[in-house]
Length: 184
Ligand code: IMP
Ligand code: MG
Image 1 (cartoon, rainbow, N blue to C red):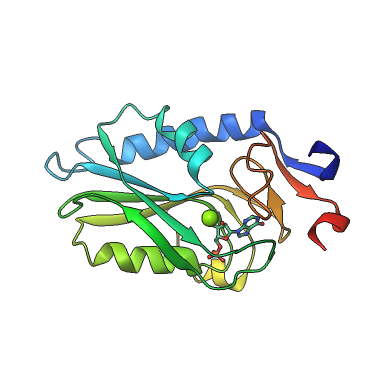
Image 2 (image 1 turned 180 degrees about the vertical axis):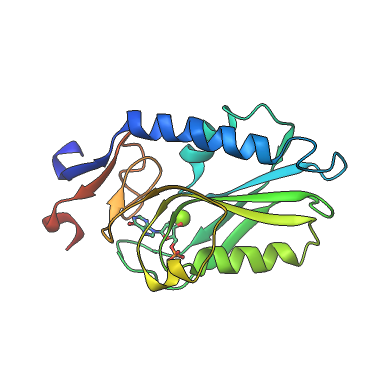
């Protein structure tokens, strides 16, 4: 598996450090008096890609929170370009009147966040904010405002730390690019 790596873009140490900063900022924004006591926070990682990011981020956030889950497919199989986002499954819970923070691994075309935000708004939350670990410099990303961004990266296909190619490589601890022979 590691033989398929072209180069390391972001190391696990850089990720760990940035997550501490993000968690500090998000915690401050979601603690009283920044947020009214009544609302309550629900974090919603977009599966499967945001799984590892969410696990690391929430353990740095000393805030009362509930977790909702939903799964989206946008890069079915071995495709390296979005085929349009589709909600596969959800278990978000009751978020009426609550503050929702959506977590995703990467912002590319923005299709995923647009779809999920639209579905969530129908559940009448008090607010919906968004946080992505990575952001690519695409037109779609520029047209999709997000509240928190971990790293801006070049427009390359990356895997590791939850991100996949054909559902492989999610367990790589660093964020890396793959050899051309692998992504075709
Ligand atoms: P968007 O809907 O085009 O913004 O893409 C967001 C989703 O596509 C992310 O949640 C990822 O699952 C997937 N994705 C986008 N770029 C990459 C990449 O470089 N590597 C792996 N997955 C990606
Ligand atoms: Mg994803």
